[in-house]
Image: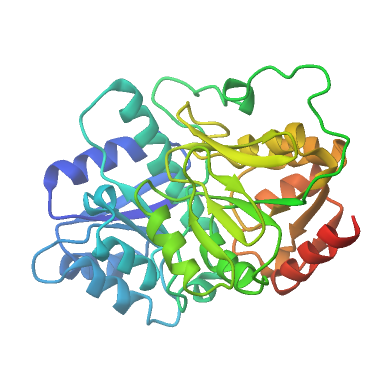
Length: 372
């Protein structure tokens, strides 16, 4: 059965555009549209959707009010915020995460072919991701860091877009790239749907002098800086959005900026990050695979890799390369995941040394960085 979607937006053009975009995915069916939440409630009473795509600014009732009301029900419907405010990283869009939005996506705009194609991928994939969060949505809502990211299933009119790997971002390896000498430990973490809340739990449990950490959390551009600032207020470590050339050192957590790939690099015995543009990898930018594969190459057995809740398979190949290079690898268990996609794929790929519940990840990281 296709995923049933209701679109609520006061722009007829946006409703039409979203309907057209979603129709390219045979696993999605738009069952109705509404110009505001009042009409939306009527549509829901006629046929309950699996996922709602919702604007923020609308007449009679704004999207945030509707979002709060629907998430106060016994069985909330997963909601995706699709708004121009996502592009600016506005407080209202960030507040939507606090009120329980599963996803934040930018409205599709007329632009270059590349932009339109990537928007199509992200919108369709956001629907898949939101649908997969059903049943565990209540776990997301209470947090002020809730959110998610798009499941990355390639859909486009006229065919399937090739799924690119980290090879398009990483330079070709040279002999002796993987280090064998000891350095400071470095931790790399990848997460997607439900990861914002999960990362809060992990990072707030880390001591001030924990090994340096680099994180890829699938989030829209402009939101990762605000996300990092919020986490920084809850953690003993210093947490910031990564900038090109930032050193990875004890007590520091670097969050990959939205819409940029972030790689781990090494000079001597010191690590730093490279932040760069590039195509979607495993349907994401930033991509966990890019970070993990760079960690395999430049840190090897000196690294600890952690893959957490999220839809799709981003990170599975990179974690296997880390594992083969001697790194210690950890996956979040199914029971504590909002969506057990990324960890499941890494486990299936033979990439994981230890599977632990969310509340044990911080302890497992610290144990691995001491004894591994």
